[in-house]
Image (cartoon, rainbow, N blue to C red; front, side, top):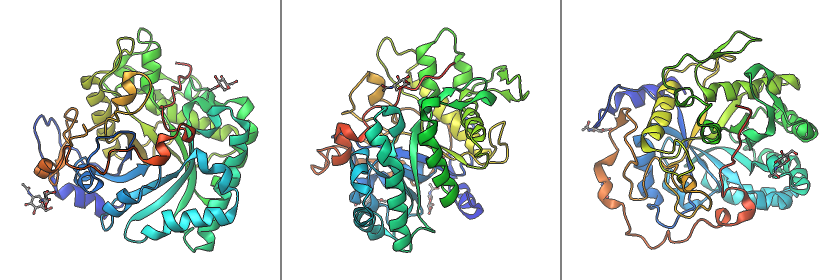
Length: 390
Ligand SMILES: *[C@@H]1O[C@H](CO)[C@@H](O)[C@H](O)[C@H]1NC(C)=O
Ligand SMILES: *[C@@H]1O[C@H](CO)[C@@H](O)[C@H](O)[C@H]1NC(C)=O
Ligand SMILES: *[C@@H]1O[C@H](CO)[C@@H](O)[C@H](O)[C@H]1NC(C)=O
C-alpha cells in the first residue's frame, strides 16, 4: 500500500514464461491454509509468497513455525483465533494469555497487524457460538490494550457472503434479517476500534450453481458488457465488485457507511468434480491473474472508487486433506512441491523459483495438519458455499 513498498516491488519485477503484461502489484494478500500433509517447510514458503508479490499473509491459526519463518521479512500477518477457542476467550485473562504467546511473542520481528477472531461464525446458525463472538473480540481487544499493542494490531472476524439476504442489484444489498441483532454489535465494535469488516466472497459458487445463467466472462473479470444497477446507474463488469458493493450497501442500510470492507478470501479452483462447472486451470488463471491485475490498478469498486481493494486470495497451496468436493482441494496457486499450478500471467519478482530444489518431500515435520485446523469445530474445513441471488 505505501508507496515505498510499491516501488520496491516494482524495481524487482522480472518476466517469467507466459507473461503477457507486466503487473505492478501493490498490496496483495494471500491465505496460507495448511490442511495438508505434504506442504513445504514454512521457510521455503517465504520466497513463494514474495514471488507472487504478496505483502500480506492470512493464517487460520497462529502457527509459530510460520510466524518465525517470516520474521524480519516485510510480510504482514493476519493470524486467526479458531471458532473452537471463542467460548474460552470471553475471559480476558485467557485472551491475554493467548495474545501473549501467539502474537506478542513474535513481535516486532514478525509483523502481525491483525487478529481475526472466529471464521464465518454467524452462518453456522449456532446461537451459542454466535453469542461468544463479540465478547471474544472484545476480550482480545482488551488484552491488546493491556499489553500496549492495540495501536498496531487490530481485531476483526471473517464472514461468509451468505450473511447477505439480498445481493443484487448491489444497491439493494442487505444482511439476513435474523442476523441483524448479532451483526449490529459487531459493527459497533469495528466502528469503535477502527478495524475493517471482512467477507469471504466466491463468485465461483454462483457460477457453479447456475453455469447456464451466469456469464463466465462476468465472473472471471474478462471483457463483457456487464450490468447496470438500476437504482444507482453504476456499471458493474465483474461479479466480485458487485458482491463487495452489496456488502457496502448492507452496511450503509444499518447506518455504518464508513466501515471499510476487506475481502478475506476469494479464489477459483483449478480442478473439480464432473458436476463442478468451470473448475479448470485456465479459469483459475484468469480469475486470479485478472484479479491481481485489477488490484494493481489501485481502483476501488463502483460504489467506493477511492477505496483501495484489500483482498486475500485463497490460497497459497492445494490442500490435500480438505474434505468435500474435489474443488475444495484445488484452490492453490502452488502445488505442494512449490511449483505453480498454472502461470498467473503476471510478472513475478525474481526471488521466485531460483531454489525450487529445496521443495518436495524432504521434511518429516509437516506430516500432520496444523492442529487447530484439523478440528472440525474450527469452521475452516470447507469454504463456505455462499451462493447469493445471482
Ligand atoms: C442458517 O439459517 C438460514 C436462515 O434461516 C438458512 O438459510 C441457512 O441455510 C442456515 N444454514 C445452515 C448451515 O444451517
Ligand atoms: C534478483 O534480485 C536480486 C536482489 O533483489 C538481484 O541482486 C539479482 O540480480 C536479481 N536477479 C535477476 C536475474 O534479475
Ligand atoms: C536454497 O536452498 C538450500 C537448501 O534449503 C539453502 O541451503 C540455500 O541457502 C538456498 N539458496 C538460496 C539462494 O536461497
